[in-house]
Every structure is written in C-alpha cells, then in structure tokens.
Length: 264
Ligand code: PEP
Ligand code: MN
Image (cartoon, rainbow, N blue to C red; front, side, top):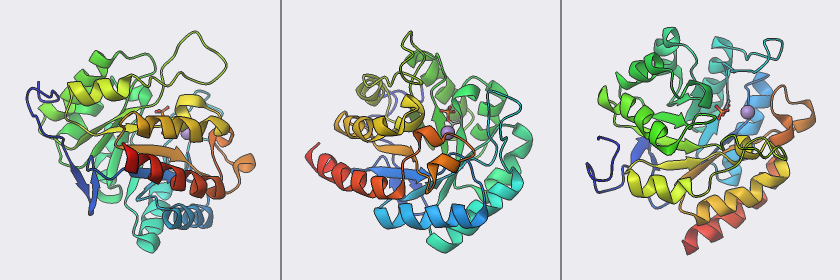
C-alpha cells in the first residue's frame, strides 16, 4: 500500500509554503477552533506566530453535533484566514465538509483538513485525492489504526501524496474527558507509515488544562507536530472554549516543547 513503510522507507516531508512538515523540526499548527470575527482571527494569528507556531488553524465550516450550535462563517471565514495569512505569513489549515467546496479550498487554504466525522466520507477522500494540495486527515471517532490508514490510502491512491495523519483521540468508556488520546498510535503510525503524524491534544481531551501535558507527551512519543486550539478569550469562544488555551499559556508551552523536541 502507498501509505506503508514497506512502500516507502523514508519519511514523507510535506512542504507547505516553505514549512516542512515531517522534517526533524516539529510543526505547531495553532489558532481558534472556529473563525469568528476578522480582528479576533488576525489577532490570534499574530499571537501564535510570535510564540513560534508555523501554521494557522481555524474552522470556517464547523461539523457541530447540534444543528443549533454555531455552524461557522463559511466562505467569509476562509476570507478572514486569507487576510490573517496575508498579515502574518502563516499558511492556513481549515476543514472541508463538502466536495462542492473543493475549488474554494484549493484557492484559499494551504492545507485541507478532513475532520474525524468525515474520515470515512469516501467521496470527500477521493475528491481531495485528485489534487496535490496537502491534506490533514483526522482519525475517526471510533476508527481503528487500520481503518485510518485505509482512509489515507483512498487519498493517496487518487494521486495525492501530501497526506498527514492526525491522532485526535478516540471514543472509549472513559467519560472524564472528551476522548482518550491514543498515545500508542503515534509510534505505531510512524512505524506502519511514512506519513507525518500530527497530534491534536485539544479535541483529544476537551479540557484546556490537559492540552499542555498531552502536547509534551505527544512530542516525546515522536509526533511530527501538533494542532492546538488557541483563543484570546476562551470564555467567549463560539466553539470549544473549554479546550482552548490562551496565547500566554501557548507561549509557555512552546518553550517547553522546544526543549522536549531537542531531546527526542
Ligand atoms: C477541528 O479540528 O476543528 C475538529 C472539528 O476536530 P475533529 O474533526 O477531530 O473533531
Ligand atoms: Mn474544536
């Protein structure tokens, strides 16, 4: 299989506007769960950049559990990300929900995110597979490692080799936190596949105070990067405020991560 280590021995390194993902240096993608107001988005982008993040995250189309929850700004949200990129130089990662939006994402996003809920949306996988735009594929809510890798294979088999795998926690019997971060998935995916492995400690825990310890553990376990929710005012966030860390906390975490990354 194209995803496998047997097929390709060397690590895949994905170049996103000069940011090399899967390289020795860890890649930190950070930003709000959802794109909200323009000034807020641009403000957070500046803060995460100054702390050392190299990719800006932000959802414009949000896959919410309840239809009454904030669904995202859509096209306008993508425009805010483009503006934030213009001001900071940070490439952006944003989630696509619908194959009909592919042209829009090819134009406005630097990395297309496929969320956990769409890990087995095979038409969406085939669609993003038809281009060479980098894809961040998240592990499904209850997906096995094998299923996860087969979803990546869907994308790669269509021609797109720029895929990164994102462990974001899985459903278990534990209810104390939102999901259970499968730490063993990190070295397992690294050995089964040549693709970069990114960890999302925010959705994996659902709790802001668990984000720093899980981030450190993920880097120590060999992750190539992290996807972290950062918000300047988490109490007022329109989505996932309870798992978002403040820029000050993010800055402190970045300092700790640099030390751990230097040691692994
Ligand atoms: C997200 O990263 O915005 C998101 C919705 O995550 P997940 O698909 O992992 O739940
Ligand atoms: Mn979120």
